[in-house]
Image 1 (cartoon, rainbow, N blue to C red):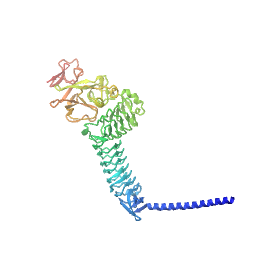
Image 2 (cartoon, rainbow, N blue to C red):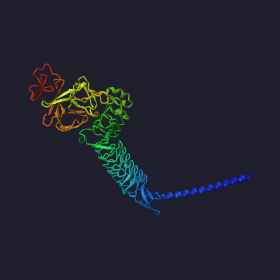
Image 3 (tube, helix red, strand yellow):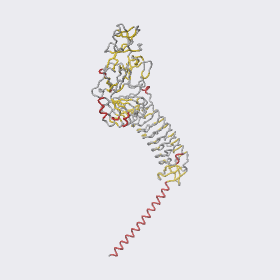
Image 4 (tube, helix red, strand yellow):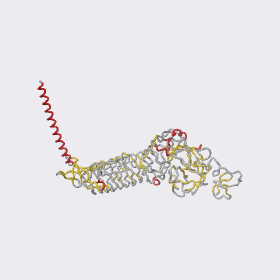
Length: 608
């Protein structure tokens, strides 16, 4: 019995040894075959290194150059090796970018057979000047394919292309023009970022999506047309395109619209981009006033905004990241409707911000520390308690840049003037061309309303009489604005036309079918504008007088009288003067009054 068991064990051991030998032989054979096949997959032929992509389909991809000091790359459509002819369909990842090849290549011609240029294939070829695609149809140019080819000037793209991946031409600083082939549906992030010489870009009709940063830092780009099929444009797509003058949109596009070169979504609720070089006086006759329909301002929407002021609409809800990056904005009013302000929305450390909301908007802007922020007196404690807003220079008393005497203003927030007589606001409620005079009516309680009327986007022009004895005049933000639930409005007649931003004003203008003649405030009276031009370009929140005088009036100036007093221009008459004394409207005594309006015995007198 034991003998049988021993023989059985020996038999099992012999069989096990035989199986191990057989397995070892098989593994060695497979390894040898794999080694042989692997060796057969790679070969050099002519100027290029190749690898077989698909032996059945007889396709290969190019791995690089045999001679790394080659200047001209002209990839053939086919290559024959070991009696097998292969079609060249791919350029492999980093084929020409991770060797010394990249320091010599000056031109590249790619064959009609090509389907794909893979990731980073020509990245960093700093001497490369021209690329020609002979293919009529390609599958993809992958990410970073020509990234940082800083000398690249021209690219003849294939007739059709499916994928143009991110950062494909990133940093091609000398690339001057580009026509993106039909078939491309998306321009991915940073595809053309930092192409500083790119002056002409044509987008295909197949395009549907423009991603964030895809066309950023292209300062030479002046105009861009958005095709009909584009459905998505992400905020920041045109970041720091400082030379952009205009964006147009195909009339049949269902998602976007351009108004005077400014890009919006179709409903004009989202302002996507204000081109930095848009000719504002030609297009808008003013620094920009954002349309009242807008509720969202996109990331980088006013990037490189070249003007000092902008008026935001009363229905605005959100301001995007870096919305005013690199611009010259120095003052801005944030409407009470705004709920969120994103990171670095206002990049200038010295920008002054007027916050109309009693409740601080949520914000990611941790750089708010450098800003002076004015708030309503009732809101100060709320902002002081906020973890971010408390870092700002919070103020409630707003110093006015006014001079002693008469000044015009048009605030884009409600204003409460002090009631101590240092500053009194008036509306121009009537005029008499026969004696060239206007009538002023004070605003009740010194309260100047703003943001009223349709959409709360109508502004009120005022005339301020300053009697501060040379001291700084300070006002506060009004508490009864359009979001307060207890709004104060002005509904009376007012011939003052408010301009919340510097505005181009013509001597004559037609409004609602009526011809108006415009006058500017000068030396205590309204004088006919000598020519068309800007309301003080370096200032904002001004007003001018517009009177419906028709075409026959020759009036060149208008004085003003306060309708609650017998005289204006003279606040009080000295009692020691004789009853026969005559005074000009500015209070100067005259002995021989000539043609005009004077004060005599406390009454206005017209001397013919």
